[in-house]
Length: 134
Image 1: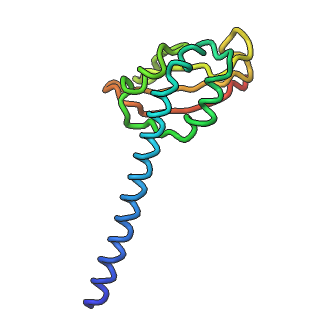
Image 2: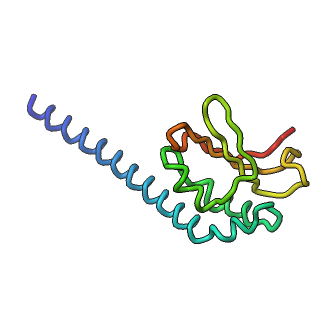
């Protein structure tokens, strides 16, 4: 019985430790994302029409590995600048940024976009990179 209790404590310690390591790894990844965004914010903002390719490159190299859920929108928005569009849906505010330039219209097939969904407390509750497919 004592051996089972000891084994259970060890098992819970390992599981708890691995969750802690995962959490630390996720936090470190987010810190790197914020660091990159801070460093390259100027170039992101200069590519507001997504014509020079910087935003698409940034999405490939940085944004796909970032976990923005739970972070405050104000902390992220300062690095991204003004969105290409914003709209409300089901009680959330969406901020949309264009990542590439296919044509003048943001709705044309092949246009790559990123959406940040923000709730009424100012926290990011959703994040997605997607291509307009018609």
